[in-house]
Image (cartoon, rainbow, N blue to C red):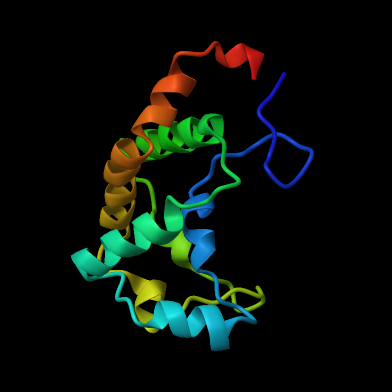
Length: 139
């Protein structure tokens, strides 16, 4: 058994893009881009609101997906050499874009993910407890 991607019939990879890919506004600059442009990801209050409203509000993620994401995030946060800025870098050949300039070079990309972790462990607490109580080999 394996935990499946919510959209594809393949193994779920709990990488950090699950938390920030939701902010990609490519080809939606006039709608989602305008909505997200109002928030500064470097501002603590705005960042918390963005994380709660978008990163942690993905109804297609099961409680098992949430645990896998949080465990992966916890592991990378323990790595002092992990390049969090790389998550926000977009190759000019890619069809992705962030809602405002600040996303391309955050003051502290690690802080952004520390906030995601802190809020996820609070907001997803019940789901995480249920998933942690299961035998992962049955997923």
